Length: 117
Length: 203
Image (tube, rainbow over the protein chains, first blue to last red):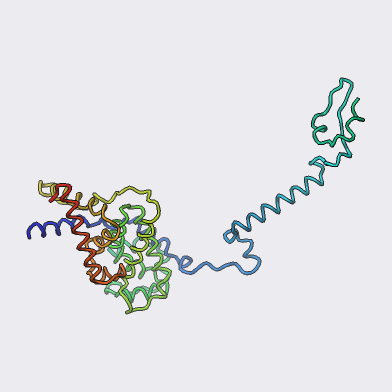
């Protein structure tokens, strides 16, 4: 019986926990604001679409794909990407007999021979 | 105790509302209806009343101080946000709060744990270190470690009874089981605990 009582007493003492810290109380009280009390209202209409918090992976993916396409079109239109039709092959042949390998790589071969000196 | 909690509130906020008489002890239900109106003083008082037990419970179930603090913070934020939905008289607030804490702890426990068991030696006993005291502390440390190693539900039952100090009926309601089932769980937990302690040469 005495054993049992001691066990109960020790268990109770062992399970006693230190009080919650002042820092925790402060944190909770600081969070208890009027703003945190109500669910955040979504922005109305198209303004909501501008709120990045509402963006999902799919939407971000679509945006990235559209941006990539736009860059591609711009680059193509600006001549940054060589035309694969081969109509404007430029071979930097010169007197020393060197050949522009970059231009060769993009050429389809039809006009190559004529340009070599 | 209440003073310390109120002291940390910004002064401007305290000045927003007409002062209420907080010298009289108010019921949890009364405080909750004031919280529903956005009364932060009432929230501070309710928090001050329950935070130590809720924190102790979470810490015993989780075994981690930081995780326990997160759980308690979440639980009190739920109180702040949902006070308007509280229906007085239907249930005890403390039982509801402990249920929120226990469920959140069990959710966390199901996730990978990154915290070590740090709750074993946390007694705040300022008595002089007489030989008996040292011996008792060592015994309590051993018991706390054995409790921490118990299965989750048994550990929760022990914490509800011995840390939160709930009656069997309240603890059963918190765990959403019958009183009989809770008593049986508690008996099993203590038997398991004794077995483990005997294995350690404690008893």
